[in-house]
Image (cartoon, rainbow, N blue to C red; front, side, top):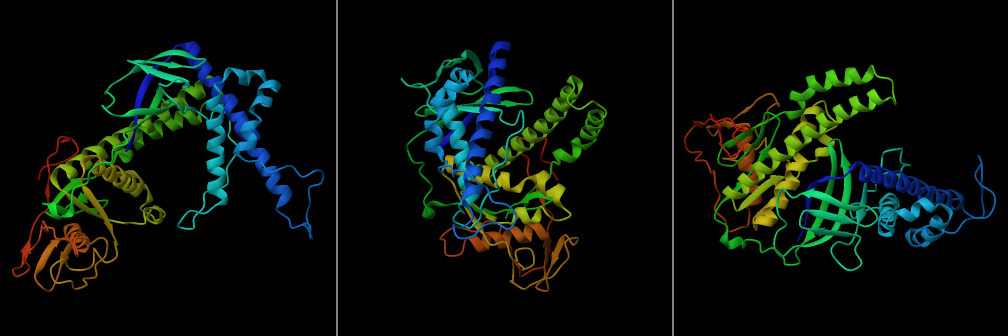
Length: 419
C-alpha cells in the first residue's frame, strides 16, 4: 500500500531562489521537448502519397522523439546550457517522464476509450514542483534524517513533521512543490504488505449513502449530514479580493501580492472541504463494515445549472477519500447503479414520480419518508443483493409512517447539526 504524506518546509531565501530557478529551467526544457514531439507529429501525419491542400512542411523529417531519446540528450543540453548542470539529473528525467505521460494519455485511449487533452506549452510559473525519485539510499538525491531534508545541490531544509511516518513504511520519492502559502514536500511512502479486508461473512453492519445538495449525505438508518457550503460562504470575501485584483496593474508587485491573497483564500476553502471529507469518511468507517454508494456521473451533473453547488460539495473527491480510508481500515465499499434510487419505493418497489423540489417520498403502500432516506435504502438493498449480510435501516411498510431525518453528532461537531 502506498500513501502520500505532505509536510511544510522552512527553506532559506537562497533555497527559495534555487527552487524558483529550477522550476523555470524545467519549464523551458519541458516546452522544448514538447515542441520536438509536436514537430515530429506535424511532419509525419500526412500519408506519403498525398499532401495537404493548405501547407506541407519541407526539409529533413526528424526522428521520432520519445522519453528515451530526449533523456539521452540531457548531456548535450548541459553542454549547451551550463545552467542545467546545477539541477539534479533525476529531477530532469522526472520532468521528461511527466511530459511522456501526458503525451501518451493524449494519443492512447484508456480502457474506457477516453483520451486526455493535448499537452500545452507551460507559461512562466506553471511548473511549481520537481521530484526526487529516490530517497534515503546510496544513489538518492534526497535524504530525510529526523526533521531535516537534505537535497542534492540545494542543501539542508527544516521539515515540520506534524505527524510521524508509520513504522514499516519505506520512503519511495519526494516531491518539492509550492503552494500559495509556502513550500511543501510530498513524501510517497510504501508498505509492501497487502491490507487485509474484512471477509464478507464477517460483515455486521452495512448501509447505503445517498449524496445530495440539501443534505451532504443520508445513510440507510436515517442519519444525515448538513452541507457545509465552504465556497459559497467565502464568495463575498473572494469577490472583494478579486475586485481589488482587477484594479491593479497586471504584472506589477501589487498585482502579484493581491493574486496571492486570492490564491490563499481558494487554498483555505479547499483545505476546509478536504478536512470535512476526512471527518465524514472516518465516521462512516467507524460505524459500518460495508458502505454502498451510487456511481454517479458527476462530470455530467456539473454541467447543469446546479454546477456551482455540485462542485462545492465535491462528491467525487469525497468518494475517493472514503474508499481510500476504507482500504486502510480493512472495511468494504461498493458502488451501484444510481438509476431509479430516488423514484422507486424502498418498501414495495413501486415507481413514484416526483420533481426534484419534492423532498418527501409518499407511496400508495403507506410509506411516507424523506426522499433521501428512501434513496439510501434503495441503494442499500441494491448493493446487498446476494450478500449474506444484515440490512440496517430497514422499514416496516405494514404501517404508514412519517419519520424525520436525524442529524449525527461527530467529532467534527461544527459541521454537523443535532436535530
